[in-house]
Amino acid sequence: MSAYHDFIDAKSFRAVESGFTVDDLPYPLFDYQEPIVKWALRRGKAAIFADTGLGKTIMQLAWADQVHKHTGKPVLILAPLAVADQTIEEGQKYGISVHKADPDIVIDGIQITNYEQLGKYNCADFIGIALDESSILKGMDGKRRKEITEFSKNIQYRLSCTATPSPNDFMELGTQSEFLGVMTQVEMLAMFFIHDGGDVAKWRLKGHGGSKFFEWLATWAVVIRTPEDLGFDGSAHKLPDLIYHSHVIETTAVNELFVTQAAGLQDRNKARKDSVDDRVRVAAEIANGIDDQVLVWCNLNDESEKLTNAIGDSVEVKGSDKPEHKTKALIGFSHGEVKKLVSKPKIAGFGMNWQNCNHVIFVGLSDSWESYYQAIRRCWRFGQKKPVHVHIVSADTEGAVVANIKRKDEQNRVMGEKMVAHMRTMMDKEIFAAATTKTEYKAETQMEIPKWLAM
Image (tube, rainbow, N blue to C red; front, side, top):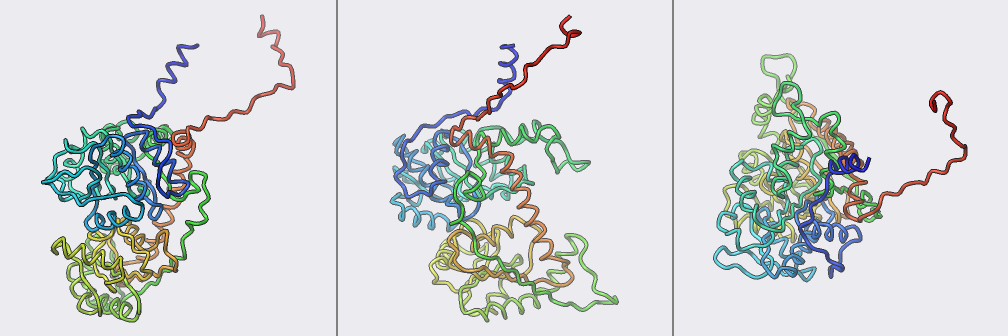
């Protein structure tokens, strides 16, 4: 019987701890943040999937600072453009020194640069690496993703930080796992997933593999949408209302009695291009009527240019701009120096903290729910004191845009709850080293073996 128990026990997933233990952390962390940081340090290679506004920046900085103090060697943080400057400011608040990285000078301590600059650095110079807003790995081309994974593979301490990953996007979890050296994406898919029907690009959990998958995930990642997920009081993190305003542009049918709504991606893209001028006009009217900061999101270059021309006191940030302009504009919006900001979610939708703004305008939406979610969460996050107003300007030919967004929001909420529910016991065990409690069985009736069985 002992051999059988040993065999079963060998099948259980175990966290391979390659880090170190810290008793006290000298930072003003929230009660739920400290055990997460200690766990990540003990794990050595870990992921913190914490929803926006839960303090990934300070947890990441505390982790990097402790790795540096423990080893006496430099730690590198990779972040989206402009987030580096924001992180340096955050570090100053907590007494943690963070320097802009220089490829020619390796500074003793924590250094930060943006993802695009990674090729200028030598991995041998760093004992630790942290990815800020690491979900953008999913949106990068394979070459960039491989570059980051290859750069990091011999670095002893690794941390991946991003908002709660979409429970439907397991490919993202595979890239995170591969970066941390836990398991390659191919191995993860082969072990836990099968192709969904005939589409080899879609994967779903094996019928019997769901619980094992989440058990495995909990050995190297913590998933938290609210402090309550880890048993802490989350009342201080309740967000103000999110108020949607739908503005539908009525178009004129051509050679048809009724306007035909877009049926697919190609049709939706055409509908968006055909309605640019009308959508820009309505969005500009809304923005110019708000005597406060406004964040305006668009997806087309034509939209961006026309919006900037039509909205007073606006500053445009586009992909072709120099890094200096992008940083100045994005940080300027954080400080209230820029009143109206126009950009695309793929440029400025990750990492920035803009609780100072509670008016958001989407001049049409892309088909990426994550892009929309991240763009909203720049403003609707912990620290926001006012209700956040979201104006969605779309053409009637685009279909039920707002309804689809709300449907995906609800789907993500439900799936997120399931994900945390699956992982809660394992996360509790991993982070708090909690022992599983068992209720002792007290027999009240004497069991008798049937005579025919005893023969």
